[in-house]
View 1 (spheres, rainbow, N blue to C red):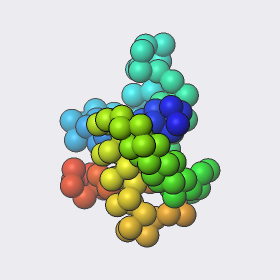
View 2: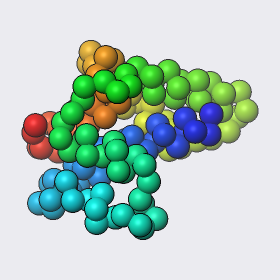
View 3: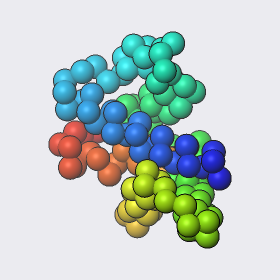
Amino acid sequence: MINQLIVGCTHAVMAEAAVLAEVAGIDAARIPDCLAGGYADNSMLQKLYPRIIARDFAPHGYARQPLKDLEMLNEFAGGLKARLPMSGPALTLYRMLIHLGHSKLDTAAIFKLYEQTANVTS
């Protein structure tokens, strides 16, 4: 459950970081190299983030998987009466993504939720 909390929220944060970089006019593709070796550097930054920037949503894992995992996490935490304010928004984003018909795209497709609202396009 701890892993699902970290991974599910990190997917959403990666998409937001990509949007922020693009809207700010920063070369978003350079972010992993710029952050290499720092506290934000991790395997998701090095592997998932570049796929978000490239709009490569061919499935390496399906978007429906983090939804299932975040739903389980939500139920588990609820049973413990543990407040998890970061996982709720990530769960909502994955629910929206699946509702829009993207369950068979890669988990990186969460970026699709940001494209129109942040005025960034593929």
